[in-house]
Each structure stands twice: as C-alpha cells, then as structure tokens.
Image (cartoon, rainbow, N blue to C red; front, side, top):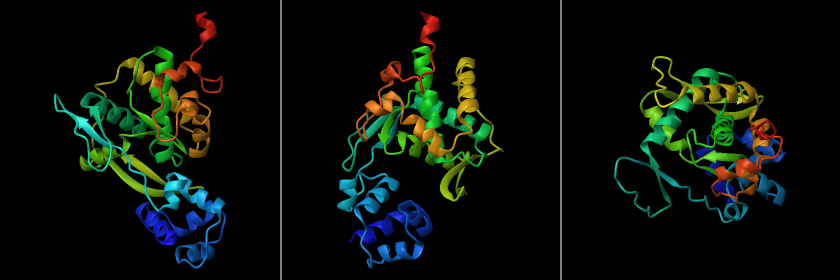
Length: 261
C-alpha cells in the first residue's frame, strides 16, 4: 500500500509527520490518516510527496525507489566493475581528495550558520565548480552533478560524507531552519584542515562564492540553480554538462564577456 511506502520513506529519511504534513498542506492528524490508510492522497499531494523524497512520480506510484548510482573511488589501475543492482561510477582518487578539501573548507568557514544545510551545500559546490569552469575554462573539482527537482546534486556526496564521518572529520546532525527540517554537517575543530590540493586562485574563488552565496537559504539558492543553463538543458536524473556554462543567462553568468571583447 502507498501509505506504508510513505511511512517507510519518512522513517528512512528521518522526517517528522508534521514536516510532511506542512509540505502537502494538511494538518498532522490528517497526515496521520494518510499513513494509516484511512485517507487517500490527491494527485497534487502525491506529486508533492514524490518531490520531497526526490522520486519520479511514476516510480512513486509504483512504490519504487529509484536506483541510485553506486560511487566507487578509483585507486591506481583498478577497474570499476558493473554492479548487479545499479550503475557503478568510478571516481579518481585525486578528485575525491579535492572534493573533500573544498567541502571541509566550506564547513570550516560557514558550516555553523543556521542556513547551511545539505541542500545549500549541494548548490554551493555546484556553483563553485561550474562558475570556475566558466571563469577560467578549467575544472576546480570537476565533480559530476545530476539534475533533480531541487537542483544540481553531486553524485559522490554521500560516499564522501560516509568517508569523512568514519575518519571523524565531520559530524552529521538534524536541525530546523525556520520550521524546515534540514541535515547539517559540522567540521571537527580538533582535526587539522588540509588544503594541499587547492591553489591560491582556487581558494580565492571559493571565498568569493561563499561571500556571495553563503547567506542564501536553500530555497533561494535552489531557485538560482534552476535558472542556470546546465540545469535547464539537462534531462531529469541525468548529468549536467560543464560546457553549457558558456550559454548562461545574465542572472547566473559570472564571466565578463564584454570586457574581453
């Protein structure tokens, strides 16, 4: 039953009934009836829940969670093997190290701010990567991002967080920001920050992005990412192309082409 599927998803994602009730515009008692199978969902409510759980609507109706890519860190000459239950993506070790250092640097600078939750971090990483490519024609992290309802999502984020938590460098916790539940990450102050893979130019760029975007809420920075050509041009759940930054609208472009001319 869809009611049981929703309940399982809510518990798996550590969400409250009150939060999901607010997302679909009903009271908590009404939402409880939905989970108990005593009230049917409307089409609009069903679509909103599918968006919250980031599952395509058709999959949600079939009570299927979409298979997510399996990220494998590529070390030396080991070849990635195809997984039986999903797509295995091989990521070079040096790219992982750079992702970790950029992520920890962001957390050290603004991770404690109340608006800096997981969704905001996704978009910050995205703009750091794609803006750098537009400015300098080369990659900073060069991470792969896919298109979902809330904006660009770095596919190796979960794997890297798991690695950083295991090493005791990051702590994950749940919090609220203006009544909205969010996942936050705090950097361990007792662990030294390693920035060996980052150049002075790259650090200056990251600081610039933090200054201009670090005060935005998840809703604001997601809305900005939805204007960006790489996200607009991509198909749902497919990778965003770096080359599309050269076709950006005025709202998201960071390169002064007129000055160059």
